[in-house]
Image 1 (cartoon, rainbow, N blue to C red):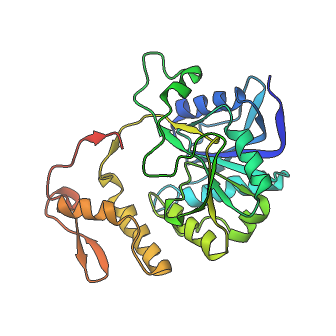
Image 2: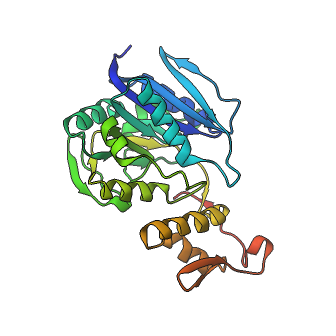
Length: 292
């Protein structure tokens, strides 16, 4: 059994995806160093409870569904607050779909303690569909292929001065003092989109730079998605509008432009609005689910 790092916590949020959470739990238990605390915030998921894998326990906080959708921002804030109240100095936040590479926790702990004034992210590989029997932790290194849209320093390298637009909550870590300085996610964002970019810019406005740690590698388990994510159209419009009101420009414009090509939305002055004449405003057949 690997040792736990005092003062280090891992936080994730979940709504379903219990099998993905199980692999994440196993990956943390098998890491070169474990977190001292593992907090899961279950959003409108009463069936999710505490569990222990190879001696690593997880505790669960529950959060009800918001009338407008899943409270992703509020759930992450609750998870981090729960970890800090228990004495965490370093908090690692992982998406429920992300399995941790063997050195992720140890790497994040090292860089956060060396440079506590930064907001840290690590490379994430989007995995292909799992083979029969599911993913094997021992095979993840062989599948390592970080997402090309984000910095991907080699293990042992770091990149400072990151673009706040590229912050993502799939995998990040922060010192308790820096989290309090930034103030966490804006809880006005509900459902899909924009809360990550908002946090990146909130951090930058507070004088907190984004940095990337090459050894903090994570592996995003495959699941079907839509491109563009038309099922989140209302969330994207609502959250994109909130981002515009806070920062003077729209977030997620790439998705909005693709949806405009499908006849789902249209630009009206400084606003994006629904359009189209089909069911639920969809003017054309929707695209099939694809891997991002």
